[in-house]
Amino acid sequence: MGQIRLNTPCIRVVRDGVPDIELQTINPDLVNWDRTRYRHKWPPTDEAPMLWVTFIAWSAARRTGAIPPDHTYESWESEVLAAEVVTDEEDETGTPTTPGPVPG
Image 1: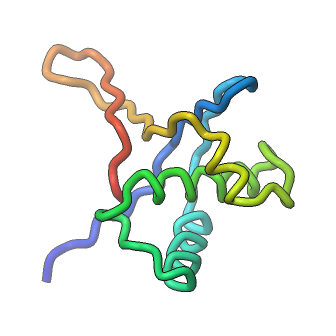
Image 2 (image 1 turned 90 degrees about the vertical axis):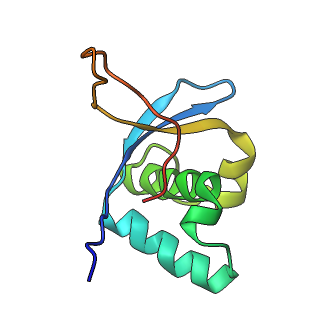
């Protein structure tokens, strides 16, 4: 049996007219995604990585108070210009890298 790799990425979110924010996702954000995806019959993470990263960033933003608790996902989705996973990994030259969104 293969190992399942789960991560809780830090996500940088760019929205129009407000400062960029970095949000550290945690397990409750990923569980929120799992439950909501199932309820709405959304595609799996590997088939919709931008939906996944945008949703878990929204969940983290609400949880941390970065946005009000009544801020809907639909509003969030329409105002997010970019969302990307932030890493502290380095390439072979020692330069920090920041890849685009990756499925959890």
